Image 1 (cartoon, one colour):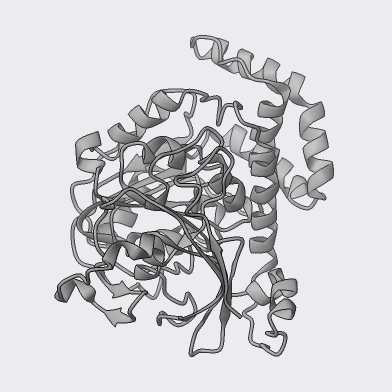
Image 2 (cartoon, helix red, strand yellow):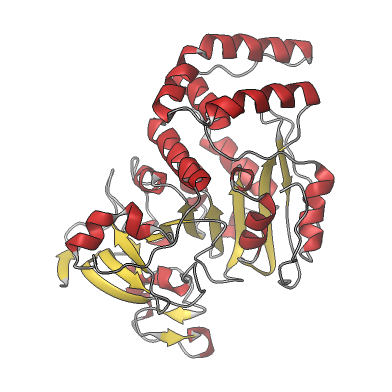
Length: 418
C-alpha cells in the first residue's frame, strides 16, 4: 500500500509539526545486525515544499531515491534534492539477513528487537510472519525505558543539568569540538544519544546536516521539540532510533560526531566507543563526554545505593527522587560550600528529581580516569587529543576530541574497566 499525503499547501515547518524521515537519510543507514543496506518499502509517504535550491550536500555513499551505490563517483541527477522533499511517514527497511526495521511516525526504528518493541506495526502491515528478532539484554531494556521516561518528564524551559541557556549550549559545543559556525555550515554531524534534543535544536541553527539518534523512544520528543518554536532548516535534521553499541550507520560517514553522557550507560564503554568512533570521517572530529571517577567514599555510597535503586520500578524510583529533592538541594549547597565554590544554580524540584533519576535508574554506569580515556582514543589510532573538560557544575565529565587516522580492527580483549 502506498498512501500519498501532500503538505505542499503548508510550506516549511509549523510550530509543533513533526519532522518526517527524508530519503536523504538512506545515504547513511545500514542494518546493525549484518552491516548491509536494507531495502525500503514505503507504506505512506508525503511531500513538502522547501526552499529552492535546497542548500545541502549531495549523497556521498548511496542514493536511496535511485538505488545507486556510491553516487559521489557520478554526477548528481537533476532531481538530487528531491530526497529532501519526499517524506516517508510509514514504511519498513528489510534486510537480507531476515531482520525488518519499521519506520513509524516518520522515524526509522533501527533496533534489532524492533518486532518485540513494535508488535502492532508488524501486525498492521501483514508482517506478523516475520519471526526473526534479536534478543536484547535486560539491562539494555532497563536503560532504554529509563531514559525514555526521563526525557518524557522533561518540560520545555526546564534546565538540562541545570543549563537552561541555549546560547551556553552552543558556545560549549563550539569549544568542545574546536569549530566555528562557518565550519559547521554544510558539514555533517552525528548526535549520538540526543536525549531531550535540546543540543540538536541549538546546534541546528548553525546549518550542519544532523543525524540525531537515541536508543529510547525519547527520540520522538526530541524531534517534536525542534518545532515547538518553529525552525527554518528542518530538511537538514534527521532522527532515528538506534543503539550506539550496534551503530546502524555507515562507517566514516560524518565530519563531526558528538556523544555526551551516553557511552558510560552502555554494557561496555569500550565497545560503545569503538562503535561510534568508526562513524568519523578521516580528518574529522569526535567529542566524547564521560563520567569522571569520584573520590572513593562517594563512589562506595553511590554503588551501594544503585545496587537497590536499579532494581526498583521506575515510577516508584522517580517518586522517591522527587520526595528527596530538599535533601539533594541541601547536600548540593553543602558540597559547594566545603569546596569553596559559589552556590549551585537554582533548580526546580522536577529538575532535581530528573537529575537524581538519571543517576539511580540506568542499569549501567561506569566512571573513568583521564588515562583510561586517552587509552581509548590512542588504542583506535586517534591523535591530536585534547581534554576540554569545563570547570563548571558538571564536575564529573571528561571530554576528548579530534581523532585522525585509520579505522582499526577491534581488539580481542578490551580494557578490563569496561
